Image (tube, rainbow over all chains, first blue to last red; front, top):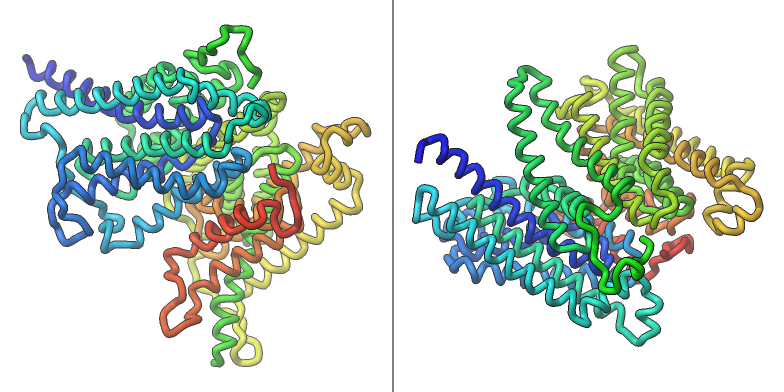
Length: 321
Length: 299
């Protein structure tokens, strides 16, 4: 293989790995919002707690932060899901009964508080400098084989999450979730424990986001405060879901592919113009503008996204949203 | 200097100033929530916009922060009315939660425009250090803090007068209490919506200018304000302008006073965790009394 081919392949592997990690988190959000109608804007918080849990459990002893447990990858990943689930239980218990706007505020709140803790508790998290040297599975293979094997691992996890969620959503459990979203009163009237079911969906979705955080920490071999900023996690994933089609798992994955490709390629376009001076610092922020604009255009013109949700009862059963 | 004066000079007055800033933002958030029925997450970025417009006015015209206020208010109001027309109005007939999502998109767009126009550096209005005024030997207060409190009180009296005496103010309260009945009574919802944005954006601009005037401003400042502002609106009761004023004050003062050495020598709460106070108050309210102190609405 020529050097150029290796360059392209490694770029493609990087892109697809990121798409798969975002895809996992997107699927979690889709269970929250797309299926159950729970407005979770604290993805960054669940991402962060998952990423830090995995990082602390799998790194070697450094003295800069708590840890040194040197556990294998899968222990960290499962622990990440458990810690983010506990956090979700706490948030959900308080505001799952109120309208979605309150859940939005509370989830933003918990994400920001977590950032404060990560920043201030230097002894545990190494503060703004973050946790580095997180082991990356298959790295020892080297060359293209290492990243390729890691991509396969992430895609494998993505497929497992996808299949389980699809199964869940097409089971009676998933149908009740949709019923709660579309007509809460009717669901309540038919004797369903709406609060409990919502809490279940919220916890499962959030723990999937925590898993995404763990994957990201292992991929970058580093987790710091910057990765927990809401723009790169919360907002990008929301846009991916809305653009792809909320309520449709395949749509969300397509959205992750499209939006992440746009996001990472726009960086190259900006570099290609080789701007200089003050303007070169500012123009990259136009990416944020474009993401916000795309979100608004899709909401106004294509409310259902690229792949609309498929309703079990066919087109006539489609509720107005 | 006595402990009491130390407390007033360094904890209570900064708390009242911070409370004024939160209140100015929270009134808008609470009124938009009450009248348009959605949580407006771009409100903090409107405050940032106001602060930066004033920054330019100060730079170009050489005026002080007070004379820059009208520019900030008008600029922010015009942009906000434009945002409503282009991004929120087309979604009016849809579920309000869709508008909440749209407001996140608007927040991103506003922030990135601010970054492109004004850059990503932290800016201040003046570089010098101003000496505080000293009364009775030991009561110290910065001149700007007196101005900020006076302007906040004037703004609140203005809101009170508008809501209780003017036609549009009464219409706003009517729509907030019952949109169906007020439509039957022939109140133009669109006019009420515009008035809500004008008041909300104007107050947000004042709050934004105060932040920059008191310390500094950067493009991401609006995001950090979202949590305390919403906490203030919930504490006061959604849809209640007076509640939002009180809520903002309580949270602002609580944040500053929390780092006073109440027990022992060190601050009671590390200043790094100030923002946590707003969140804690909000969580307590959501559990104990979601309708807020002033019995607002719970959705």
